[in-house]
Length: 363
Image (cartoon, rainbow, N blue to C red; front, top):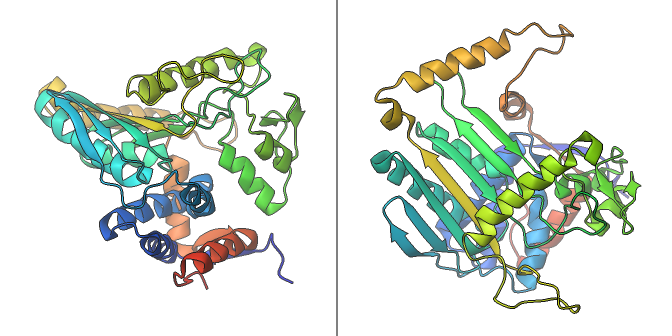
């Protein structure tokens, strides 16, 4: 019997091809399947293991529940000037998000700033992938998403109400790689709790709570309860700030796009609730050269990043970093050595592959 915690190093290209093969076998058209596979494998290559191939089993479950439309045709339902709204038709979240960010970048080159909202979508992987797409085109990018499934427990609350609601921001320098921030507004992404369970490892205290809202270090309990704290963890350490940021994301991604709830929708107790299935996204692009009238922004950002890198560290072995540095380093390391995947995840992927008659390409 194989050890479920055993680690195998898989090339990034193999991961991308495996995901693409699964999505194609489901009936997703070739272009959308390739786009989604690229976004997910990119997360694995950059060390965002909670948002890579490990999501495929969850997507398979949601497809079986009818939440993902493999034949979806996203379309622009409203567009005027610097803004647009896209209905995703319940598609995989990745292709429509690439479409939205590319549209925002194109508009920003004309107007200086642009935003595109998406409704009726699904999980879109790592938010940072889309903000970095903008930065690669010389544009400042922001990407956010809410989740219909609640996980964040509000300050002073017992039950989860908001999604982990990530915020991603990327800005292009000239000589340096883009500043690339990608953060959940919770202490940790829920899928990271699941990854600890796959590896049989306890989670740090403060990451998650049990059904009664009490802290737990058991990843299985934390993942099943779907209760994580806002950034800050406790009121004394600033959880109200993480809670506020999570609500900001929910407003921009769900309320603004019309993905929050049907009018008058309530729970069994008559309390208003958000949609249990709709996912909304928000994308913002800014062309710094239109604002500045030249290309000085990238040079100034380089000076700022260089200043931070030159800051004397407390521990010489731990230099001062900026957002994106760890992911860029991980990408270089995994490009050479492969992505570490536990046997338990490979077994889950093999089950998905067998159900859809796709080829198994991970060894």
